[in-house]
Structure formats: structure tokens, C-alpha cells
Amino acid sequence: MAALAALVVGIAVVALAHCSVAAGTAAPPPKGPVTYVFGDSMSEVGNNNYFQLSLAKANYPWYGIDYPKGVATGRFTNGRTIGDYMDAKFGIPSPPPFLSLSMADDDDFLTGVNFASGGAGILNETGVYFVEYFSFDQQISCFESVKKAMIAKIGKEAAEETVNAAMFQIGLGSNDYINNFLQPFMADGTTYTHDQFIRLLVATLDRQLKRLYGLGARKVAFNGLPPLGCIPAQRVKLATGECLEHVNSYAVQFNAAAKKLLDGMNARLPGAQMGLADCYSVVMELIQHPQKHGFTTSDTSCCGVDTKVGGLCLPDSTPCRDRKAYVFWDAYHTSDAANRVIADRLWDDMTSASAGAPAPRARAPGPAAAPAPSPSRA
Image 1: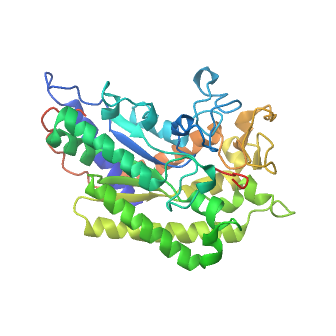
Image 2: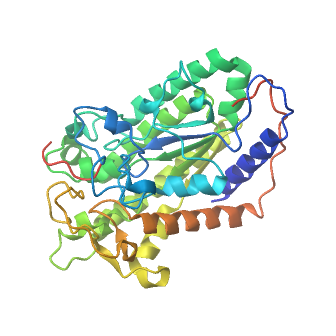
């Protein structure tokens, strides 16, 4: 958490530096930190809408029923994502989906982009039965194209400074378990022991983070896995409806390995500020003590689709009457109300930890610094 706290302090300093840029630069600076989002369906804001053959989409009712104007944007929840709420705390709009942008015609990509895609995992083989989606490696390639467009528009020095100062939010790994290792028809679950699988995940993530670092990423917030054994789609595998403790233990082990990786990168890579967000504890608190946070139900989904093929809230589903009372919206994804609480907790944890962290020295702004088998959880 200390690394993540330092990252938040750094972002705050950068935001203040941007605010102090003198008027008259070639392009106006962003009003808050530039944010790049990489991830799966928990972070997606609509990229898969643009894939004609994708089986991982949420651009239909009842998704988005509690989003402004009740629009189904492609977010896999009834309203806003955790990322949406975190962006609001930073005082910035949620970055648009990469595939919605025309980098030749507008400047929207200069203030942040969301590359997240339902079905994605750390491993390229994860989610293959969703047909069309962006794997993490593909998301990084998309970011590379954004950076090239930035250089063409604002120059190499300004582009480098903007990327170095930006917040990189990464939320991946859940699908590598839910839609890969734990699926009997996927090879990884039979090829590797869990210890071997974690080593594969960490080695792959190490390469991917180094690639992002090479492209200029310095401030990285990596979301740890939540208690995957407690999502409704896993609970139904037991007659008692209890959490699958062995699956939760997988998540705990992965989080420990990911933290060790991030700490090592901070030690080895100059300027790196990479931290693990403790999503496991935050989500487990909601699951074990829902009433404490205004919920009544944390073991089943609002849409009542826990045992249905795919586990998504399709148009023929019947959502619960009080959507704010449920921690889970569908069999895999948390509700808008839960996402708000999770964002509040993560923010409080980061800012309270950063209170005791020394603020990094602000840098002067640069010139013109403008910035399948049945598919389940996506």
C-alpha cells in the first residue's frame, strides 16, 4: 500500500503542476491526471461494442439501467464501474473506449483512454471462446498506437512527459482463473499445477509491465484479485452456497506474487511507482458484512442469473426490485452501489496511507504539455 500511496501523491502533484501551466501554450493541459485503463469486463466502458463477433458484450438491457439516462454503454453493471467512481474522485471524466476514438480528427485521446475489454486476461489464451476482444498484450499495442498519435500531435517531449506523469490503472487476472484455469475444457487447468500457473501468470505480467514501462508508464495501480470463490457463479457449485475457499486461496496467492513483482520493479526500474490495490479485503468486507454498508444480499445476484448459461443479465432476466440492496449485479460483476462503496474504500485506503508518505518533488511542465463453450464472466 505504501507504493500505491506514493503513486497517489505523485498524481496529485502532477495535477497541481498542470494547473499552473501558463496560458498561451499550443494545447491546453488536462484539468486532472491523464488516465489509461487496461483490464477486463470490470473496467470496460464499451470497446467490445465495436467487435461484431464478440460474445462478451453488455450493450443491452438491463445493463446501464442506473447509468445516466439509463443507457447500456457496454459497462458490465447496472450503472457505473469502480473506475468511473475513482475518476470522479480525481476530478476527471471517465476515459473513453479506445475504439470510439478518431485520433486523426480530435484530441480526446490526449486526456486518457480506456483499453479494457471483456474477456481479457493476462494470458493471451484466456477468453478465446469470447471470439473477439482485446487481450492485455493487444491493449498494450493499442496504447502504443495512442502514444505514436500523441507524438505526431504534440511532439515527442510533451508526449513523453504526459505519459510519464499519467496514471495507469490495470485490472486483470480474474478471467485467467474463472475462464481459464478453473475451466475443465481449457488446457491450462490440466497442464499446470497452481504453483506453476502462478509462475506463468507472473512471468507474463512481468514482460507486459516492462513493455509498458518501455513505452513510458511510471505510475501503475494494479488491482489485486477479489475473493473469486465468493462470486455467485462460484457459490452455486456448492450445495450449501458457500464460498469456494480453494478458489479464494488462489486469489490470495496470486495477489502476494503480484505484489512481490511490483515491489521488485519499483526497486529495479528508475522512476517506477507501481502498487497493488487491495481489492480482496475490500470486497470480502462487503460480502461478509453487507448490512454494515447498506446492503441486504451478497451471496446471490440482483438479476437472479447465478445458474444460467453465461451468468449475465440478459433482456429476458428479471432484476431485483431494490438494486441498491445487492452487492452483485449478475453472477460475476458487482453492482453500481457496490462499485461506489469499493471505490470509496480504495480511495480512503490510498489517501490515508499517502498522508504519511513524502510527496515527490513536482517537475516543471514541459512545452505544450497537453496533455464458446458457454461463455461466463467476461
